[in-house]
Length: 142
Image (cartoon, rainbow, N blue to C red; front, top):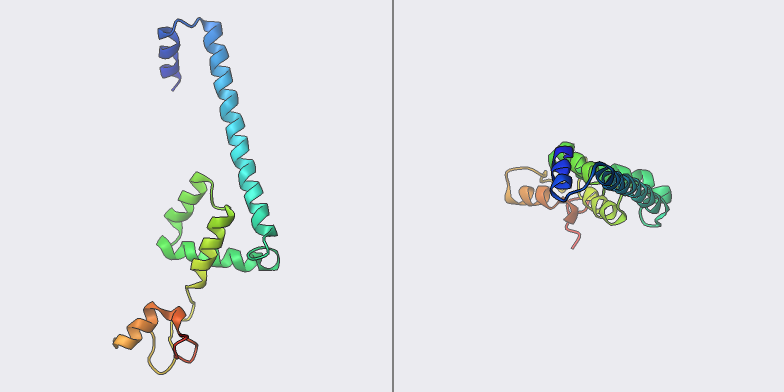
């Protein structure tokens, strides 16, 4: 990047002092943008912690459900890395969305009602795929 900048500075006729001033200004802008992005992440996390729907006493459960949602994407590796890279992992809307997704995944995949989820019967496959639509006894919620 520095070589590219030197080329532009030379093409534009900037002397060493002018080029140094522009480079310094650009560097200051990058530092300020990075600090602002870090602060935004801190502010978002605080908003999540304070949120009545997902924070407070529900914060630990929210973290568990969000992690469960992310883990079910690809084991969480690429998804988590992507969220970390772009810095939106603590955005309240994303946390609410992922919490909602996480509630759809169950530790126990049995559908109840005599036909286990995941069995080869059509009803078992439906219960496995749409487990949130069934009560613990296997009866439909709707």
